[in-house]
Each structure stands twice: as structure tokens, then as C-alpha cells.
Length: 221
Length: 278
Picture (cartoon, rainbow over the protein chains, first blue to last red):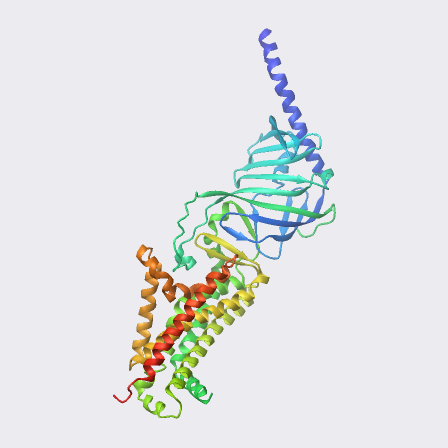
């Protein structure tokens, strides 16, 4: 009897914490779930190693459940992961386990760090969320998928907090060092670059959103 | 002016003059059609490194990129096409025996040398313009427009489409400048010899030698490299850098101009005093 009581005493807080973590995650999802579609202008700033390009303006389109597209006149380097891919997992609160692992002050807000692990085998392996429980907003997300590796996104909020839409998102991406033979690049007379460098580097793509139009018909995607 | 028209008539009445135009058109069409059918595989292979990190949106394989690939490929081989005509400008007269008749005309030797040099330059310009315009127009017709992705051995520069036409124009001008060095060199050699083949072969031999010196990563060659015209001939490519290094472009242009001046002066001096009676 004592043994069972001890187990209950140990497990109960964990169970309560898991439920509380799940509740926080679900509250954020429910806030975003009010959006059927949206359209916005986006200004992209790139800070990517080995890629030298200027900032670009584009349009971003979203349609429930997870259709997302950024359209521009020219060439764009975009993160491989769809930012709403994680919502496929978060939609069903029985499909994942949420564990509160820590807390951290982020953007002057106390954020819970919650690990979301899918119960079934999915493309998403792990999702780490930094959630401001009071505002029900995800300030940071680290998504690890089988197909596209790991991506880290940090969100900054402004006018659209009621829908959980950020004013600015910064994507941090791991990039392999770009190399093609000099013969293919036809750099016959150029001197060898003697700078030593690692084969993997990190780069960022900053997306600044403006002029959100929410719950309007979207035909672009 | 009459002399210039006469010289132009002479070079355009020789079949070898049209070899360059024919070769350029054939290569442009070949590359365009090859990339039309298998260009995506080529791009996928080149951008394989980014495959794991990014989705690249937009028309990468557009007319500007095709034109840039063609320019890169062909401009390396253009010296031969230019030397084929300019190497024959004086030695061709000597081998056919018309040099004596030419020099009995009232024009001075300096005027004749200058006119022949201008003729060679006009031919060089026409070759570059043909290459630039046909590759650009045909490329845009088949592949459309878009930003230019410049693939380098250690990175990628992305230049926006509205920032491209002036770069193409100026790069053509720099390509003309680089090829003018070749044209002036082969004409200078042409003034020294009595047959057409020697200037062409000697010009190409010099270019190959200088290119090898420029390519080999040997410390001794580091001292020579800045003075070789072959190092500066590819300066046109710097116009397709996102951040333009105008100092490099200007200094390379000056080096090329100095080479033209030296080759012209040596050729002109020798031609002015050349004994045509033996």
C-alpha cells in the first residue's frame, strides 16, 4: 500500500505538469485555429553564408490547415520546413505528449519550454516550444523532422497577437558549405581561397510581415 | 575613312572572317537547346548542397543565366576567333604580295597601321556584340527573365533582374577591351612575320602560357600574375558580383589599356620601319 502511495505521490506532479504543458500548447494552437486564411506582405532579409543576395519583398499566403506559400518576382531562398507543419501535430491533443522541461525569459516574457513528442511515428521527431502562457503565444520553436532536419524559428509579436501571428520571424538554418569545381565555375585565373572554414554553418532568414489580411478568400495557393 | 572601308571590305571578303560568327551561333543554339531539355538536372546538380536546407523559389534557369553561361564558356575561346582575323591583317598582305601595292598608296604607314588596327577592333566588337545580343535575346525567348544566380566555386551571388542589363552592357565592353589586347597582340606579331599562321599560333601559345602561369598556385607566379593580361581579361566577370569591386575593375581596365598601348606601339614602330623590299 505504501509502495503504491509513493508511486502516486511521485507521478502525480509529473502528470499534472504534463497536462498543464499540453494545455499551454493547445491554447496557442486554438488561438491560431481561428484563422481560416491570411495574406500579408513580407520583407525578407537574408544572412546566409556563401549566398550573397539582397533583401526581397514578397507576398505570403496561408490557408487552413497547413497550406503556406511565399511568392515573389525573383529567386528566393526559403526554409525547407513549412512553418505550419507542426500544427498538423498540435491539432489533435491526443497525438502527442507534452513535457514542461524548463522556463526562460525571452523577449522580456517568462516562457515555458515545452517538449512536444508525437505518439505515433511521424515526420516530426521533436518539437520544442517556448510559450508565454499568459499571452498564449509561441515565441520560439525548434522543429526536428526526419525529412528536413532541424530548424529554429523565433517570433516577434506586434499587432496580431489575438491571432498568434508574428510581426517578424527569424529562421535559423544549418547550411552545408557550398563548393563546386573551379572548372565548372570557370574561375581559371582566380587565386585559391585559403580561408579555413567548417563544412557546416548557420544562416538566418528574417521575415518581417505587414498588412495582414485575415480570413479572406485565398486563391493563390 | 576610305581606307577603313577598303580594309573592312578586305576582311569581310575572306571566308575565315565568318568562321567566328558561325561558331558563335552554333554554340549558342547548342547550349540553349541542351539546357532547354536537361537544364534542370544541371541546376539540381550544381545546387545539390542547398537541397537539404532550402526550397529555392523562382525561375533559376532564365535567359540571363543562360546568357551568362554562354558568355563564360565562349569568351575563353574567343581569343582564337579574334586572332584568326587580326593575325592576318598585315602578314596576309605580306604573304599574298599585296603589301608593296598597299604601301605605294599616298597614305602613310602609320595611317595604314592605325586603320588596320581599327578594322581589327571593329571586327572584335562585332563578334562580342553578336555573342551578347544573340545569347541574351535567344535565352530570354526560350527561358524568360528572372534574377541571375551567379555560381562561383565557393558561393552564390544573386543579382536582381532590374539590376542586370547595365551589367551585361558593361561586361561586354570589358570583354571587348580584353579581346582588344589579343587583337592588338596578334596584329603586332603579324607585322613581324610574312605568313598568317604564325601570328595566330603564337598569340594562342602566349595566351595558353599566361593562363597556365595564372592558374598554377606557385608562389613565384604570384609575382608575375598581376602583370599578365590574361589575369585581367576575365575582369568582365566581376561585374556579376553582388558587391562590385570597382577598384579591381578599374585597375584591370588600366592594365589592359597599357597592354594595348604597348603592343600597338611596338607593332606600329616595327611596321613603320619595315623593309618590304626583301
